[in-house]
Image (cartoon, rainbow, N blue to C red; front, side, top):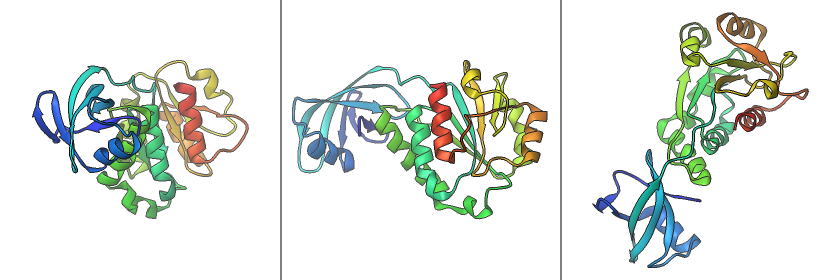
Length: 236
């Protein structure tokens, strides 16, 4: 981990002094090999970043004097609407959006999304938080993406998509589109990415009627996780 996350429900001895144990304690001791007097990079989840000077170490916990004087990294320019991927991809998807600093990830249904995907235990709040935290630790961020789940495609598109876009461009990735996202990604936007095999024609037509414009990500067919990374790299 590249940052030690502090929690509001940690044992705070005063406004600037916190006692931490668990795997964070193990990481500081065994990976960072830090000792009394050293400073480690810390951040308060949902808040600012800074440094934590080690004041005391015992067998179970470390006491840090914390100075939080840096704002969290800027959010990514794109909000992502993503057809729910295969469960085996979910952890990687969550880590990726957290590493890029996406503010909102909307998981939606699609004709090519199997119903069983929505039953994955990886969609439980605790599992989502765990995966997001791993990405935030890697990218030195303290603000988690908000993950929204929409199990019905048409109501999401017809009732929510226009409001979600809120005056921003809305792009839908589609093979054969005339415009490249690389030529359109110059401002904050909402980008929609389909499942393996892409959105079906009805879905693309419906989204276009509501608000979105189709764009392509290049001439090759990409896996969902590769397409997501490509989109975020363009908007970073």
